[in-house]
Length: 184
Length: 158
Image 1 (cartoon, rainbow over the protein chains, first blue to last red):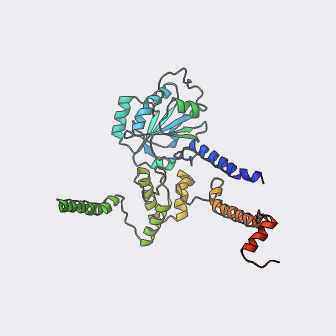
Image 2 (image 1 turned 30 degrees about the vertical axis):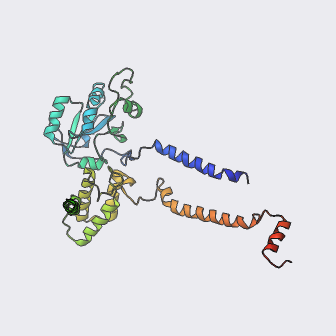
Image 3 (image 1 turned 60 degrees about the horizontal axis):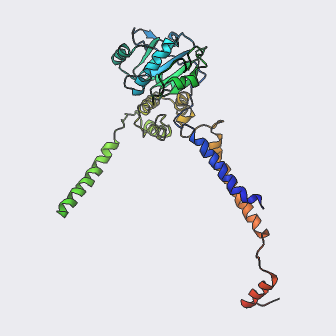
């Protein structure tokens, strides 16, 4: 009979535990449907050269695929960090998502170009095949070219060290590369 | 003065009522080759969830991605894709998340089983509750007190 008294307390503890766990779950973070799959094939122009490219143009492994656009404010925020990564030898491919190529070329001329190449995706069809739902998004292509990770939102030092560094061990730790903390 | 204010207010209210349907009509319309396709479009666009604004379906959302998914939905319907094919296309890109009625898998089994489980749990609880009742002591009164009550109530004693 004594144990029965503690049933409400136990129920409360379980509920409180669940709710507390819920506090640290980000509901906007979606599972990546393409995880472990090869990058979807495409036939799109490249931003600078204008030549038609397909998925076979993404030759470097492992590499980042960064979804960006000039209309995307957060992309401007993360741009310096992408330049930083490119300087440290991380291959970055751009997916210029639902943007105007003229504006995109201006942007790269003004702010610097961290990208190996850029897939022009005016209609957003490559983005759709990839499961993109906004910009910026950054994908990791692993050693065999499969999609290994996705980050939605601004990519910065902290996020890179936490989620990306295992594919790019050569990138300097935060202590070595001082600066670019913060963001949003 | 008062009537002028009243007039102004009713004009404002009427104005709003008149504007409301116009403001809601921002979502584009499609020409379907058959009414049956249009019906399926309505059903599927309400069953598909917008990945960006997560508590809206793609029929209600104004997010660019929802608009893109509506275009895809329209094109695939017109190309003769079945409902299953369209849902598979969406799930391959955006995961089971994109469906308001996700398929049964390891992640969603609890979701699907929850109503049944809760019903069973509730029924078991009730059963337990009512089973226990008769065993509980009916009264804390002593024998003498009970006789006294019976006397006061004027019941025949045995």
